[in-house]
Length: 499
Image (cartoon, rainbow, N blue to C red; front, side, top):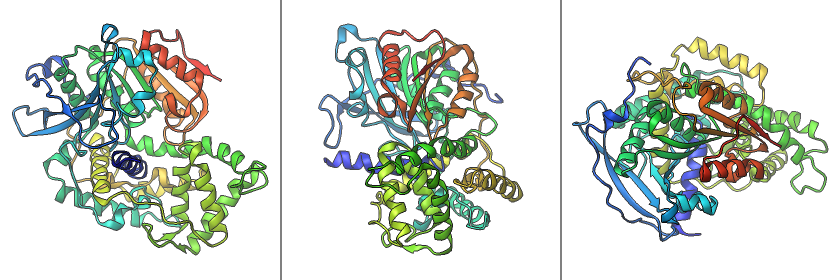
């Protein structure tokens, strides 16, 4: 594996373990507003690092730190591309919008972009980027303490007795660190800012419109861009879709894990009880859930030391977090089952490799800034105690975490703008693709985005399991439908189900 590939895997692991968990009153900026201060054309050069497609080239674009003050301080956004492979058939650019918040698509033209069918790669320049605040774009860092970088701290798992006091204390520490160390940039990291940066990139690329493939949090960025700049969109694919609730935004995404686990755990249970499976944990699928709950409760009472991990023990919440991570895609089931089998014997596997701390610090800051600047979160401890108690009773597998307090409960900066409300105003050029069983962005939330878009969108629901559907954890029917839309513009006349 090349260094570049190792770095990419490390960053991807950090995104799953951190930012995916931290997770109009103001008139939206229009395309004409952006064109008042048109960006300079990009200067392309070879990309740094190894393991990239030799055709991939990189550049940086200066954008305003505060888009409301275009003459103020500037920051850099890193961008990459692989040009369309058949210039005579070129249609335009396809933005690969990453998940997170805290994910990067800078290497995606060389990576997932090469999984696209040839007729799609013939027609589009594939465009990747590192969103504002994320290295190698101008980075932000909160200087969080090492212990608070543990995923079970960033995901707000309550104490074994359901107490949220330590979660509220963690929120205060993290928010204070970001206010102290994040500088002015931490206040200007939001989904609206990301959408405006995309439009600056569009203009710098010399394009009237963009097509996009957004995944996970990238579906919300793509939806917000489509709302703010509707007539700058060509063909938009949103894959593994976030609930766009403008009153809650990321609170809705976190809450969605309750249903996501309920949708997905039975699939894991069937796999983990299948005869002949070397990682089998139970004789029947019905036994897997109570077995897991008993084991988590036992580890709440008597954690197992786990040298090299953060924290250095396998406790109930570490197991619950491993369950959540393990349900992201079936290829992770064996590692989850092996952890369960070891813990039942009172042992642990080798500690998982930790991403470099600077990566964790950067991803944590971008994630916290985005989630907390997009919408104001409740600050009442009583509300979180009530919600967590209700969640623990109804959804014991997630133990109250999805309704608990994140750093945003103590965030010192009020949002500068109201969240974007997604509507059906604009061209009908959006295709949603969604797996039925998705632990991170459940079908129930995706249906709310579909409803918000109204006539602008068509939805492809895929009978499959895992986060990220198109060309990843979906099925041939879903992949074929999305590929046809990107290559030809032909979209199903109505919502479809890919059995």
